Length: 394
Image (cartoon, rainbow, N blue to C red; front, side, top):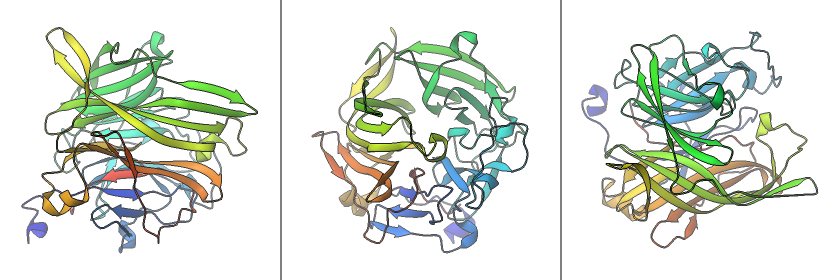
């Protein structure tokens, strides 16, 4: 009765991990539940995540999807001409439990080069689920090869492109997050990290930018690169992520350290599979910092203890959940003060076409425990990306 009347929210629960197939794969998408370590598929075909859809973000029980005719297995032509309209691309929120959809403006309304390119939207974040209030729901995206930002709300007909000025045309956006109608963007330029904050006025579709140069904890990202025999080797490479604590409204920056090697002149283009890793990235550790709004200005302070909080990290979405709020049953399955991570990479090795880097990093003792997949889950699928989301019936 509660579900039918939507009079109360579901009890707090562990997020599911959507194991998302590549659009060119014929494999079905499915979901991994941490509570019972089982794989689930949608029993209703109309609610399923078809392979022509690509997930670029999530907010609570909603996935943020891009669907294109170009991604269907029978159509593998890539067209870089923005004036071409031979296929249709749509963006929308999707509740995979109920099958409900809320449309977003088309990516073709973003005035950027290659606006019809196959992986144009790299990541999308939202301030709230679309059912809370369409008028106040702020949606932001990293687009155009990580070199542009845009924002909108679901009721609008087009995205608003954020113009950064001629001096910032080569800024590379690592990640974005939204707190209190402000977009926080972690950028990288010439080896230096910076945080840019955009104050958004949704009614006027306008914004005001303020840039915070990050001098602490690190003036630059660590990146040790060596090229030998057509292979690019990265050791102790840092990847940056942003995450917010919805309860405290605080912003966190996460440094994930990996080592990997890839063929920088692969046979299969990067635009299709994301490259060909000779040695797929493997997570070696994390450092976490919290943005401190002190009287002397903004600074980053390293965090060594989350308390009972659990941080879930992937390329498409990052979120904090309280282990205490999950209840006694789930509290025995997962522990607080840790980071659960899930990443997928193209790898043409003996194990198939995908190498998955799933695990749990303990903030307490700095150790990594692999996250095992059930035996009935086969890894012989093309790579897309895994996404954390919390199932919600409406």
